[in-house]
Amino acid sequence: MKVVLILSALCVVVRDHGRLLELPSRGSAWRFGFDTPRNHGNNQLFCGGFQNVTVELTANHLGYFEMRLCPHTDPQTAISEDCLNRHLLSLSDGSGTRFAITGTMRMVTFNVRLPRDVVCMQCVVQWKYNTGNSWGIDLDTGVGCKGCGRAIGGYGNRTGFHQLCVNNCSRDFCPSFTCACD
Image 1 (cartoon, rainbow, N blue to C red):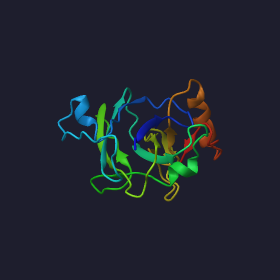
Image 2: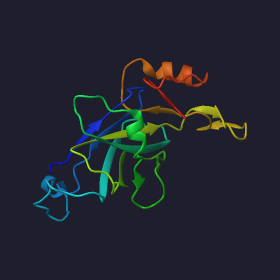
Image 3: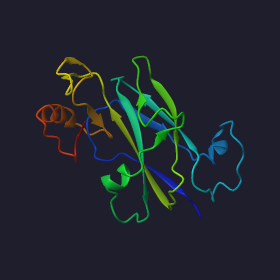
């Protein structure tokens, strides 16, 4: 059974200044020059395991990354946010699901754990970048600070939507088809 991993930038939004560069299959990584064990049966892998993710930040806006997976089986239909939210991928070091971005990062590599209970002919992976450099009010404490309050997040790039999301998220109106406000 071939497992095809398709990268997807869904709910296209803000100018998050990042680029997902690679996500080769863990069993096929050796074919791309990685120092990993050779797996000549990489077209019939089973569930579970780990996956490296590399992101290039062209402008660092702090915050965090999350990865989600949808075991989508019908390429003729759109995937749903509900499907992606069922499989929020954990970091392989056990520290949670959010990979924190510091101010010096440009090329970012991290490792996620693939769920053991997922089998699919077409897995769709979503990369989410929640920025952390906007001024806001902490919803719990009422204190204002950089990175506090609602985060503006990006799933991909579409010209013109950055300001729309900034304006609408600050008014507690965040259209999910264009913005991600936490």
